[in-house]
Length: 449
Image (cartoon, rainbow, N blue to C red; front, side):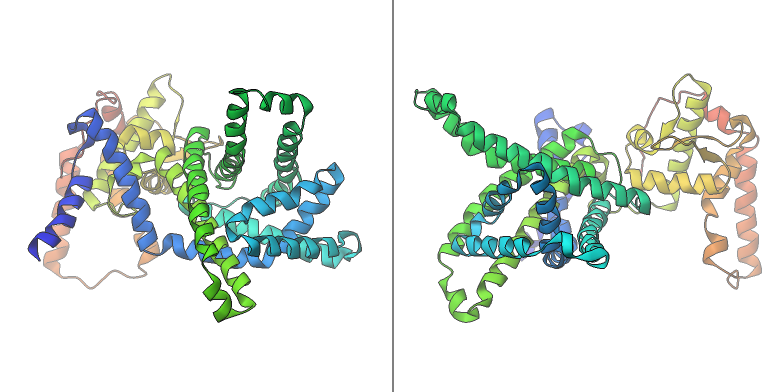
């Protein structure tokens, strides 16, 4: 029993109590992917990915037909509506014959949905169903990317409509161009020549994978209300696309031997299997989003928990580091710092950086600019910001909002607290933020516990 409990503890120690800088390069290159796999497995085991995927399945079932109806109407105007059915067939190919039956029914429903005769109320309800689904996807992606601010309502409406109008046209046009290219006489002649035919056939087999990767990349870049690097989104999309292809193959084999489900659930078997595949599809998309997030922000892989909880001492140290970097940029010719650049400078997650920035801004020590993303500058000259005031602002943050009255105390405790406050004031004396900013601001030391 002792050895079985020792293995997880040794693994935890290896993953989270090992400094990557102390390892050889090859071990360091393995440590970060191992931490990423552990982090995704942790989110899955804690139910975060499961619940998000299930909620998206529900939203998808409600908005699927309206979404296809809107897309079909837009595609029909551009003459590429005939590509809708093949793409749906490809997406539901793991369902086998049941997938073809589902696609046939969906296309029938879409054909019977005449947007022109719905009227203003019907059209509003149809658009509301579609926009609700996209809004739900944005909420899930914002949670993945630790984004608390949502897009303004007007901006969401305009961007969602642009996705509905432009996204399907570009995607299905690419599908149509690929299909027409394969039927070109010159291409058919080249296919007959070896080894060019083998190479083109291999490339043709990669087209579905490339298209789904492109669609995933677009979702990872556009949906979160933050700036996502193309490289990180592409890496997440490549892995998600590989999972899509491989899990789809496994699911298709499972479907071929699932005749017992039809015997148990009768006509409901198609719906149940369809919901299972939609759940798996959303789960794959979310796993890719998490990979893209951790690739862009490896600082979040420095802790075994999803959200790093700062101790009081580390919060004070982080506030001093942030204020020092902001003041150093103020005295130099460097541009002001934003939350992401500060996170890279101090090697801490951006969420913790934003929390401390909000504390310093609420205390009147920093102000943000109108840039996108916002940058931060001192609220007044750094020589007019005593370090004692800065530390006290961090220590006392939120007291007025959290507590309407002070807890019952004793004279001895009040005296001890006053002595600690006086000792801190006496130790710091007249040291200002300027003194920290001009004393080797780029010399960084790791936090010692």
